[in-house]
Every structure is written in C-alpha cells, then in structure tokens.
Length: 327
Image (cartoon, rainbow, N blue to C red; front, side, top):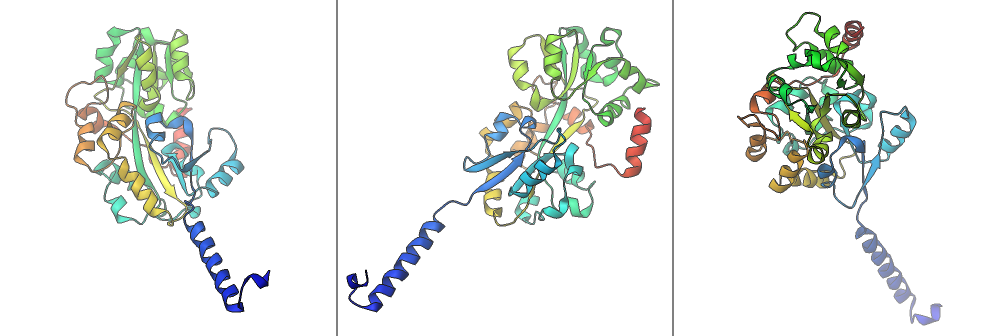
C-alpha cells in the first residue's frame, strides 16, 4: 500500500486531505431539529409553518404517560405547549429565551399574560399563539343574537341538558362569573349534557345537543361542512387559550428566529387566523386582526377581545379554593 506513495510526506499529506474532506462533508449535513408538540391542539395551517426538515415529535399530556413525555421532550430542541399543561413541565430543563429580537415582538396582551408567571417561567416562555374559545350553536338561530351579547343565554330553558362544556372546572367557573344571575354555576351545570375536550363537536353534530363551547382552532373545518352550525363570540368576552414555545438549547436560536419571523408573512398570518390561531406579535398587520369593530362571522370583535380573559398558573391555595367552589 505504501509503495503507491513516493515519500512518507506525500502519504501524510494525503491523510490530511482525507481528514479535511471528511470534516467538510460532516459540516454540510444539516443539523437535525426536533420539536415536541401535542398535535391535536394545533390547526393544520400552523403545523404547516414548521420547517419541513424539522422532526415533529408527538407528546400527549392527556394520557398519563409522564415518562414517555419526559423522554420525548428531553430529546427535542423545542417544545410547544398550551397554558393548561404548563405545570406538567420541569422548567429546569429549559433555557432562557434570551433573544431580545424575539421578546420585543410581543404585543401588550402577551406581555401582560407573561407577567402572571414567576421570573423563572417567564424567562423561558415565548407566546407563539392565542386561541379564543367560541360558541357553536346548532339549529337555533333565535339564540344567536342573545349569545352575541353575553353568556346569560346559557340559562335558556331551550338549552337544559343540551350544552357541551369543556372538561375544565376553572373555565366553566370563569364563564359562570360573567352570568348575571345568583347561583349561576349551579344553573349552568344543570344545562350540561356532558363535559368533554376531545369529541365535543362530534357530540354536537350527532346528538340532541344544541351548543358547544370549543377552542376556535378546533372548529373551523366543521363550520365549513355543516350549515346547521353557527359561530358566535359574545361581546362580553371569551376565555383564551395560550400557546408557548420553550427551548432546551440556544444552539439553534438562529433557526428558531427565522421560523418565528416567517409567521409574520401576510399570507401565512391570514391562513392562521382563518383557522382560529392569532399571533400575539406587535405588528400592525397582525394587530388589525384584533380590531374588527363589527360583529363578525369569522372571529371575535375588538370589544370581545378587550373583554376576554386568560388563565395564569394557580397557586396551591387557589387550587383548593377552585375545587371547593366547583364542588
């Protein structure tokens, strides 16, 4: 083998060139980026914005699989999660979102909600979307006008045993507080057909139910195919579901920033809003999506947005009070 090289120096030089070629080949291999998310919560228009060369890893907090979720998250660069599952995360495993260019993008609504978290959580959470809850009414056009004004319509005798509520005592309690009636919680619980988070729209379509309260991002496709369904956002406001991005490493910050900036493209933003996903960024075009002055069939009015509310993480004492109130 050595006889092929006239001198030892030529042999060593050839070895050096081979090593440099190998290093260059490795540097040209794109770094893999893994992002963990709970698929069922995200509209297709949002999932489609995630770069094609990123691997989407599925997590599911609804099923008791803490070990599996922890493993997926620990092997992922980024994690997407909604505010209802924030307490399922170990924040010690995540890095601070240090990029000023990201934080300065946030609008007043996002900044105010971030302020409800402790400093450790706040420094690691980046709000990437907010979804309003919607009221879906089936075959009851006469209820629409009263539903557009306030939540009091839920006490209508026509709705006794015909309302599908989310499986969230906290959310239902927050709605009960908006109703102008004594014992409002007890009254709206008596209106419930069932409490469900997964199949509420299937139940609404295929049962005697008349009303379902659903995240807007989960119902847009049903509204397109079933003319019996009407979409309503009370001017009194609606609950909001927030979505956050967290990072386990700052090594891929440039890729993260590039992706987030791409969401501000007007055509992408329009698609997201059409499926109920609003970007909480301080951008004139995006902020106009919150400014509708008229009653809209495609989203909340400005008045509704102004009166809407979010759900900060509960303290232990607040959890006990919530359970007592619900029971």
